[in-house]
Length: 105
Image (cartoon, rainbow, N blue to C red; front, side, top):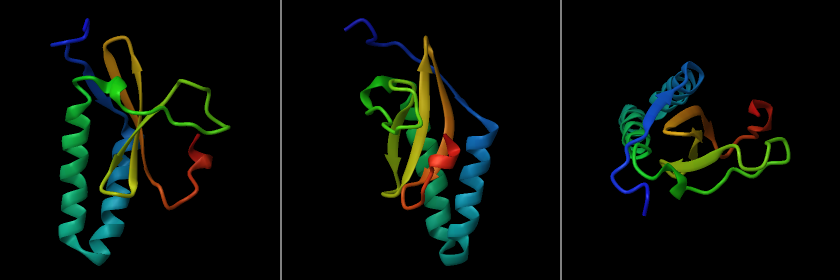
């Protein structure tokens, strides 16, 4: 495999970071532990994108150009939405799967 051993650079957009903070704040109202777990899982999943980011499925939505974004499920109900360009992974959003996120796209 050509990409074996290749490390991608992962860039988290300000908007994605802000979305994570917003979700964490909401979770803190219910459980501070759950909020901290969400942040920890985000960090772990984002770090995992350094290797083989293409392993995750495409995000399919009528409002999204086909083959632009990939999605990675985390904490059972949040999607880490990202795109891969050459050797860089751009994390563009963190969305709650239970909500309509069409407005984001």
